[in-house]
Structures are given as C-alpha cells and as structure tokens.
Image (cartoon, rainbow, N blue to C red; front, side):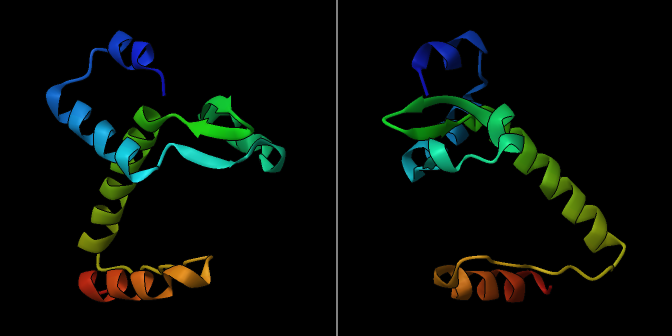
Amino acid sequence: MEATQIEEQQLTPEEEGIVNEMVEAGVLHGRKHSKLNPKMSKYIISTRRGVDIIDVLQTNELIEEAAKFLKEIMEKKLPILVVGIKPAIKDMVKDFAVKFGF
C-alpha cells in the first residue's frame, strides 16, 4: 500500500496501528493477479509484480463489521460454524472455535 493513500485518509492513531500490524503480517498480499476472482476486484488497491495488493483499510472496516455480526449471533446463542479451506490452518480453526465456544 502506498503511504500517500494512507495519509490522504487521515487515520486515527488506533487505525494507523491496526493498518501497520496488518501490513507487517502480510495481509495486504493477495493471490497472483491471474487467479483474481472478478468479485474481489473492488478490494484490490493495486498489483505489484503480478500479485494483487489488498486494501487494508477496507479490510479492517469489514473485519470490524464481521466481528459485530458475530457478537450479535453469540448474544442470541445461535450456532456458528467455523470453516477453514486450507489444511495448514486446521489447528488454528479448531483452537479458535474452542476458545470462543463455537
């Protein structure tokens, strides 16, 4: 993500910290551009060396929205199904589900 784009949006210190954490964790790197699902294009900020760069500000907003939705579901005591699509994250998904009682 280019610094000028972040600066233009005037981030709060909290948002800036979250964005920096996401960038350091590699959240902004998507898949190779040739494998891009057309529905994903509105979340892509640019493409570098054939790899799509994800808009971390928009990602952060959508994560917060998803967290709010999950809290509402949990308050209603409705069932939540946690799914991982990669075998490598099997343990992470299981630990997450157990931790939150899903």
